[in-house]
Length: 470
Image 1 (cartoon, rainbow, N blue to C red):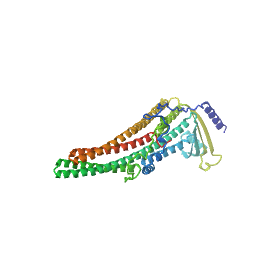
Image 2: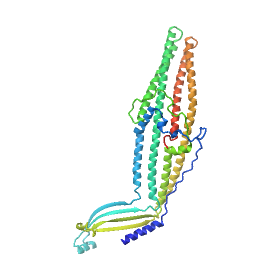
Image 3: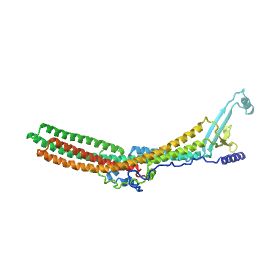
Image 4: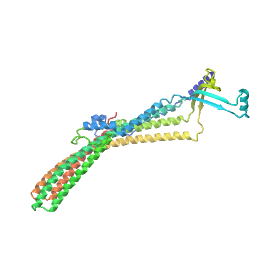
């Protein structure tokens, strides 16, 4: 027992002599963030990103689709399983500071040569030509965390867990945005189908009028053919739109984790279901909110801990091993207590000297990886600022485009009425009527597309700001 005491004392002294901790301090990289986003008049701390998605999307049908997506989307479920897996590794990392303990039972029979020294000694002293050995013992091994290596390993596990958590948040943000985009695209296709059907009725009336004029000799068969072609083009457009609607419904169903089916939706496409006052807030707030940016910073923190581990591997390691149990060369008195008890304790300080430059290489590689992650973090911030700026300029530009497209539709609708009146009075030909109808159709389809793009730009801005997360 005195020897064991001396070993523990010697180990403690060694631990005191090398009690420096090599945890590398983390300094957050400096970021060159603008005071406000481009295309915003003033720096405003308020932001639509502070709204949860249920507050941002007020359309009850869209809310129901998003709820289904968050619950059933397979990409999101896979990400959640990854979080659960990392959580298990994090739990295991908490036990790294404890010793390894094992238990083993062994039995051995050795029969040496009769002509060997061991064989003759056995026969002389034990009166037998073999020796038995029975052992049952607990084994313990523990490494003192002198340089913070274990602490850094625990930190690596924690950062990896948090990265999977942030990755899940990023996927959820993408799923929510994709469902909203698909829903608004469906509304646009519905509107375009409604426009096409209305135009088909107009084309049918034009064809009927042209046929009557041809029968009365006031126009040629070419006019009838052109009017028929116009009607057929509209019918073809209707078929194409119905196909696109079905495909979009299928895609939206899959996004929410369901088999392809009809999607219920509102009749009109409007931005009234979205916040009318769009504020981006401050760039610094966006950096702390966006899951992908936070995930990249966590990767940087992980690499910082990896540097600490690589440094610790170059320093002395204090290991204490111990084993104890029962041992006997006869099975019948194997478990006689205390005669069969044995125990040993060993403490050792090991300093790596020559490892073929492996340890230095590992340290340099860890530092380079940290530098790479610094650059990746800065790049993710720059990309995020760019995405917000793109969404802001798109939203402002699409406001103007929607106004101009609305005015164009009104002008061309009036043009159709004028062309029809002139055509009936013989003051305009069939080509002018068909041209007016075609231009009006294209303008209305374009207006529906611009409205959908504006809704999408608002959703893009919400996603780019890291909307819904604080």
